[in-house]
Length: 468
Ligand SMILES: *[C@@H]1O[C@H](CO)[C@@H](O)[C@H](O)[C@H]1NC(C)=O
Ligand SMILES: *[C@@H]1O[C@H](CO)[C@@H](O)[C@H](O)[C@H]1NC(C)=O
Ligand SMILES: *[C@@H]1O[C@H](CO)[C@@H](O)[C@H](O)[C@H]1NC(C)=O
Image (cartoon, rainbow, N blue to C red):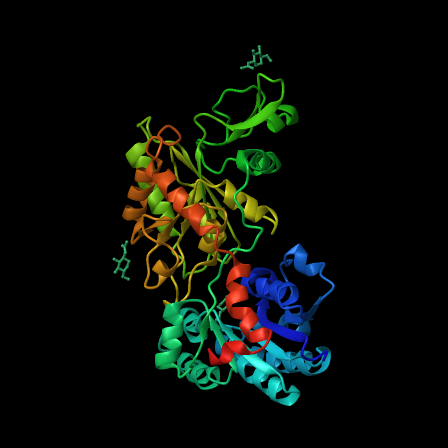
């Protein structure tokens, strides 16, 4: 009985940075009534609703670096050797977690990638403990490996063969796009994979002006920090006195201000001539060419800096990653008249609020395999925010051009879209931006829990899903 009411969720990664697996976990608890054992690396703090849930048990995996400490200089050994040692170490700690630390479970829900060594280890653990293996395909692991090594590195083809061979061993398969389901069916021999689209959870919501105002007050320091030589958004152009003093900062921010009403109360309104807020998040990795956004911002600046009908653009970029500092230097050295950048790292609670505050989202994600969709766009739609997204093969399963967003193929197109969308910003009824906003609001109605009720429940609460 206890066995059937428990599920192990396995992520060989930082759980805090795997939103989809966190949502699965919450749905397993709340929608399917399960007890959930999460086996993952620590690192970023997962969402509070998960950490404080008595039915969610977190089993943190040690990393190789934790284990060998400073004794072995891993960074000086050849990369392929480190990868192999790392994989062997992972086999050991995963097996230990699944066979010893986690009690008997009905299902193991595994995120892939990474599939090395998780496919083999989870299948073995499932056989030994008579659990069923559910593989949740987010992408194909070997395509990510090819980005790190090179396309024709021998390890890439070994990894691909392994992935193709063992990928079939799941008892159930979930995946993120119809394109991926088709690929799994036609080229991988994985039949009956079910598409479970990423959809925003409840905490990505459109917010009221007064909720946004408290966010801007809280983040006023981050917004006020200039990043460029002449930064068009660091001083309050509205002319209010001493905008840095706490009293006026709580009355007026770069975007919103308190206004006295005739009745004597106050309400929050948008500041006239405020900059437009454009939000993007990135993992600062080579598979997202951030240079495209910089180039587009530069073009927008050149095209509009002396035209009154275009607003200032403030780009807020969130996220952490290897190329962040390199880009920070690059941005700081750029001179704009009408554009400014801020780099922020926000808590899991503030990030959704910042997204809601945006007038537009930008996604530079281009799938390494061509079969996955950008989660950040899902979140933006959850907040009713329209998106300019880099175009690639399957992105139209999410972004409908001219309905809830626009697709661009290069920096020039993105710059033209920024121009088209922000022309007469805040002054024109039925602008293109407002039409897209309405489309994004419609998209925001489709939620993770609905999607999970359709697909997830079928598998975890009865096994109906398998014969569908
Ligand atoms: C690629 O390299 C980065 C940094 O070196 C690492 O964090 C990531 O896990 C690697 N990805 C794969 C699929 O090996
Ligand atoms: C700014 O402050 C000065 C003195 O502190 C005052 O004379 C002036 O009226 C203020 N201006 C505005 C716009 O509040
Ligand atoms: C997006 O790219 C596809 C090819 O991958 C192309 O057929 C389509 O026309 C492009 N869409 C836009 C809006 O550029």
